[in-house]
Structure formats: C-alpha cells, structure tokens
Image (cartoon, rainbow, N blue to C red; front, side, top):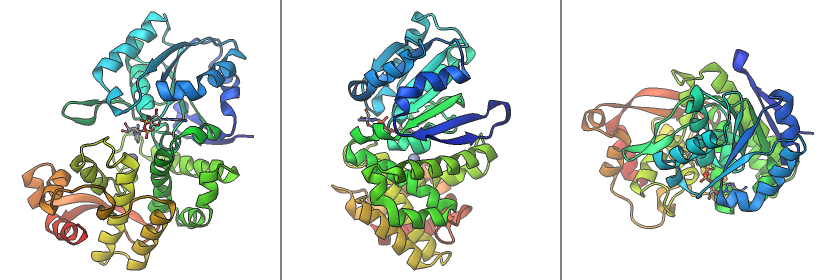
Length: 367
Ligand code: NAD
Ligand code: ZN
C-alpha cells in the first residue's frame, strides 16, 4: 500500500502517493481524481527507454491513451525552444483546459512540463510522476515550475500546483548512482532544517534507503511531509520557504564556479558541500557546536557525497571570486548577505544580516 501525504493548500490541496509499483496504478489514481480526462505525457529519452511502457500500461487500464512528447535529457532542455515544443505538442493533441499534462521524469521534465501546463489555455490540470530521487523529494512538490534563460537558471516560470504526485520508488532502481546520491543530499536536508530525529534515522538507515527496501519509501514520505509542511505555510516564498535553501547559497556559488550542469558538480553535490559549509560556518560564528558540523560532514562522506571544496575535481576560483558568485553585485558584497544558518542539527534559521567580510574569511579558510 502506498503512503499518502497531503499538501494542505485549501481547495487546491493534493495528494502525494509514495510506494513501489505505482506506475501500474497511475490510471486508477488519476481517473479517481480527474475522471474522463485525456492526457499528454512529457518525458525524456532516458526515462522513456526505461519506464514509458510501464506507465502506458498503467494508464491504459483506465482507458487513458496519452499523447507522448519525448525530449532530450539534461538541463539544457529547460529552454524556451523546448517549452514551445511542449506547448505545441499539447495543443496539437487537442487537449482542453480540464485535460492533463503529465510530467514523467526528473526535475528538468517536471519544471518544463509544469510551466507548459501553467500557461497553455491559462492553466491545465497537471500531474507529476517524478522519476529521480531529487524530483520525488523536492521538485515535484510545491508548484514551482519554469525554465532557464541565457541570463540565469530558473528565471522564467510560474507557480502552478499539480493535482496529484505519484512517486514510484521502484523506478529509482534505474537511476545512475551519482544522481541518486545527489537527490539524497536534498533528502537529508529536511533532517538538517528542522527534523533532527529524521537525520539521526538516516545516519542509521541510509544504506537501506539506497538499497530500495521499505526504508526508501519511508524516507521519501518523510521528506515529502517536510516539504509539504513548508509549502502549506508559505506557498509563494515570502518567509519560511526560504529554509529549503539550506546549503544552496554556497552550493549555487560552487555550481556557478564550475559552470552549472557540467560533470564536475551536479546540483545535489553542490548542495551537499553547501550544507556542510553552512554548518561549519555556523560553528565558526559560534552559533552551533563544531560537533554538529562534524556529524554532517561524516554522514555526507559515509554515503559517498562530496562534502568539502577539495572534493570538487579541478581548480576552483579564489575566495573573492566565490563571494562574488554569492553576492552577485558589489554593493551587496560589501554589506550584509542572507544565509540559512543553524544552531545545530535540525535547527536551521534564516539569517538576513551576515557580514560579507565573515563569509569571505570563512571561504578563505575552507578553500
Ligand atoms: P534531471 O531531470 O536532469 O534528471 C537527472 C538525470 O537522470 C537525467 O539524465 C534523466 O534523464 C535521468 N533520469 C531521471 N529519472 C531516471 C530513472 N528513473 N532512470 C534512469 N534515468 C533517469 O535532473 P533532476 O536532478 O531530477 O532535477 C534537476 C532539476 O530540478 C533542475 O533543473 C532544478 O532546477 C530543478 N529543481 C526544481 C525544483 C522545484 O521546486 N521546481 C526544486 C529543485 C530542483
Ligand atoms: Zn536544490
């Protein structure tokens, strides 16, 4: 039996179902909530090769014969050109506003298909069937959709909540191990933000989460509960939702310094190093115990994630350059920065007034 987590958004509330073998029940679960609708499935070539037949079988049991749009895998697919391709494909299939756009893939497909669903006919029904660990614990929940612009990542998009999220934990068995680990960093993040017992549980059980036993579904469900809580409190990120950026300020700077989406550092790896740095930085500022920073570093190391800058292959720009990636413009870099810091495991908070000079000296000593 799958676990159900509800995202409490009033009349837009929706369920996240988490469990093994859910693809075969996709038609049933969709028709129960959105009866009599037609659908388009947006996917990428990797996911289609491994799992599209299983999804189609699951949909056909409920007489859903979807139009399928298969895109190339990778971050570059989150582009205006591919958005146009998806929009055109959905319109060519003559889908109406009440019909469904199904995102079947990782975060790239979820963000792109969700954006298309949000703008075609001023907002179509949207269903997420996330297939990467990152997408199951993070990007498929919460309604942020969008694409990249030449001027930066995720700069163009809309908030558009799905009607249903189906996370089939078995699908993750074909995910490359590096991608699984990267998603795991985001999973552990929820423990570090405000669920210390969950982090302790992961320290004991992470190998079973990787192996795919019932612990995998348990961990994903707990992550979805954590994300659903934050999203229900702060759907449009005017406050608390920023806590989800734990590890992302340092992480994004490292991603930018290694040219985003390359082979040197994938997003979750940047977040892993970023979380370790956020804890170490918090202990340097005497906000948290160094023992907590050491615990985070040890856990990331145990699962095989990078946890310090030295783990990134090749040369990194110097501390000043890294600070400029964080600060983006000089005025900010001379003043104060917003960071997610922590008072210990599971006690993250938003700090709006971190002096750039402190960040710089910390970057120098961590380099
Ligand atoms: P991704 O979609 O590129 O997937 C990673 C790789 O794994 C791809 O090559 C994909 O083809 C492959 N893959 C996916 N599922 C597979 C499976 N079951 N078997 C085999 N291969 C599989 O990347 P991602 O890490 O899932 O997502 C990253 C994206 O998510 C970024 O663009 C990021 O901006 C976005 N994101 C969005 C949010 C949000 O709230 N909307 C949150 C976090 C991240
Ligand atoms: Zn992230």
